[in-house]
Amino acid sequence: MVKIDLHTHSNASDGTDSPAELVEKAAAAGLDGIALTDHDTTSGWEEATTAAKKQGLALVYGAEFSTSFSGITTHILGYLFDPKDQRINRLFTQVKEDRVHRLQEITNRVNQVYPITWEQVLAQVNGEAAVGRPHLADALISQGYFVDRNQVFAQVLNTDSPFYVRYQAPEPAVVCETIRSAGGVAVLAHPRAKSRQRRFLSSKDIAQLVDAGLWGIEVNHPEQMPADREEVALIAQELGLVITGSSDYHGQGKNNRLGQYTTPWSTVQSLLEQGRTKWYPGKLSGLTLALPVE
Ligand code: AMP
Ligand code: FE
Ligand code: FE
Ligand code: ZN
Image 1 (cartoon, helix red, strand yellow):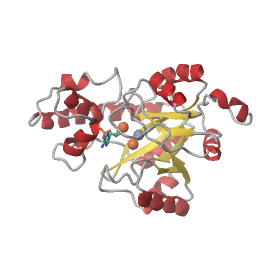
Image 2 (image 1 turned 180 degrees about the vertical axis):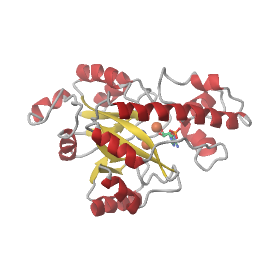
Image 3 (image 1 turned 60 degrees about the horizontal axis):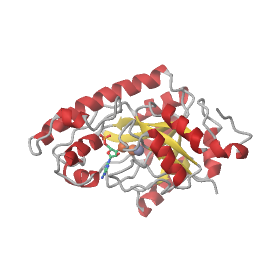
């Protein structure tokens, strides 16, 4: 059985492993391939490719786009889009700037209770990575206030907390259209991750995204419980969406294990047939003669 994990993060965003470490760990975990889907950036693709070539691991290029549907934070996974596409890069640039302002605002609020400086937060960020609450969590851990990210999110950084501030983000329909027009494939990430937030897109809301080019939806995900998955699977059936599964691995500080959930090879193949950026097949090259490769 071919095992591919279609949703992972490196320290190009809020994961804790470098892209190369992530690829090495995926190979060591017995996976055949991963998709690298950092938040709002493609900056990890190059390093991941070099490592994938060493490890013989298949690599599917992607990113997780931050969007907002009437104030509901919504993550869209984009795969195999052209990383040089102007509209894609404009989306990334805007969201990355908003993420900085918003994290500064959260940091100011948290600082009233747990003294912490912006410099201490930035010390947790790798280069030009897209910043997020996990970096503030890491700064609070480094100051000894908490033991891990889970604890910080439970006590301080969850969406119900008085410290929480939303970021400005584009609408998911615009993002789906942009991914499509850049030759990519769009998948709605963890639409019922109930431990994270209280408001969710209805199947009617998701139908609008299907009209905008949404192709798939994440059903098997560590933060969706069995009842949530059933609900999402019904939506997928109703709207004709392809079902994916993944770990949403972030390295240390989050329990998600690499390969915890994977996506059937037949599904991955139909995804791979569509993208403009060619994937790297690694040891799967013999299996995939009919598919376009790098
Ligand atoms: P942000 O992008 O700043 O809104 O932060 C959201 C990110 O925080 C998600 O992408 C996850 O990586 C992370 N996250 C959310 N909940 C938790 C949690 N309970 N423990 C660790 N990380 C979390
Ligand atoms: Fe994340
Ligand atoms: Fe997400
Ligand atoms: Zn993710």
